[in-house]
Length: 330
Image (cartoon, rainbow, N blue to C red; front, side):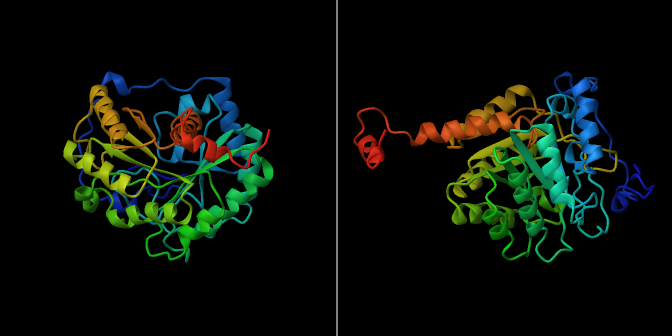
């Protein structure tokens, strides 16, 4: 069982579970070890600002590629999560107090990295009255102060039973509000036991109610035992909540104590999921074996914004074009 840096069990709730067999990854999932100078520079900036990244904590397979481009997903509110999801490699335990200097440190790191787009995520903090929503807002404000042109994407917890949390984060005006459903509803009891599928859907729907112009995003993993029909139903549920952007990636088992990989979904199947998702009306879809919530997030945000602009722009000669230009002068 993996240990944390202070030699505590990383996943104490999983310590007595029987080991699940780990499967050899197919060729399309294997990645190279990071070696570039930019990777090490990114790592140094993160260490000097006393920050954590989900890239490391969740053992993301794309860390070498992303850090070599100075792309990192910053994880706020500590390293210990109050949940114990069966798929997740983030350490579980009783978190400490929030770091009041963290928002300033995050803003400084984003400026030093020169990020045009940043993703901010967190552990679950069920111990906090607002689930950490106020801390998210403070981090957003600090980034705006340090580097006003950076676009900000938040990947939040579900804020289960935290009234007003969505309102707090939305009021801080992130450019993208992301919350992952992670899997199909049938598998929640075994994969995401501390969460509720329809609560997560309601959170995404609430964001759109509060700010219809805010981009919303969600993602799922496949290879956990879901069926294709169930994946399509999740797509329909997300579209009913007016979610703009869907990510679909392969689940990879962090340790033998975690949920077993049911199967490795082929690249061709991911292509079919992508086509189906676009047909259902998502503005943006990222579906591939190595897709993760923040993988290529900056480039994808630019494409997402362009897709909305193309959808909203009237065609030449459309009567709505004259109406949309009324009141504007050169």
